Amino acid sequence: DQLIESDPKLRALRPHLKIDLVQEGLRIQIIDSQNRPMFKTGSAEVEPYMRDILRAIAPVLNGIPNRISLAGHTDDFPYANGEKGYSNWELSADRANASRRELVAGGLDNGKVLRVVGMAATMRLSDRGPDDAINRRISLLVLNKQAEQAILHENAESQNEPVSVLQQPAAAPPASVPTSPKAEPR
Image (cartoon, rainbow, N blue to C red):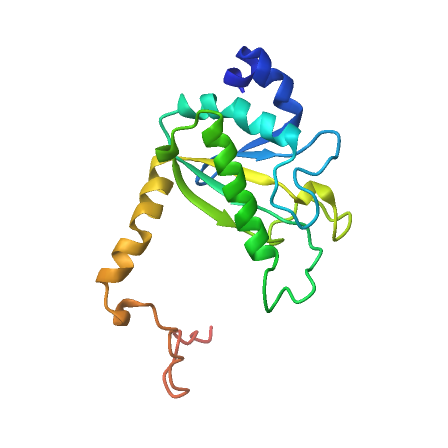
């Protein structure tokens, strides 16, 4: 917040940013205070005012030593044939990538981006309706070191571990085996 307040350009953008601390780091959700969508329905093309926001925060993200993860989100409005073809999953990933390109155009070092993901409509901000524009948004996560390391190692470790190390559901003990000590009558 101090960084945003110290920069007049960023201070003007503050109403468009929802910032909170989460387990993985600092989450910055870009929303529109005037309730305009960041993207048109069914489109991954960044709206001009969204482009301005992304390009304005790019230098700030460069000034932070942490890497970032980008997530694209959609509203609940389903595509016709979405299950068989292009769906909200692809659209949300395309929105995240379009936003990444705008951040890079604004000066973000491409090496700062660790992950780009599409979340479809799985993480809604609003329950006002299936096509609520506020849900068509981008979330930036400034990763803490622990989250960054977990992402970097999530595939490397799984390739080296045998399948047998995957946790199996615990089998229930046979009915003849007591599972807790019997209480003594008093």
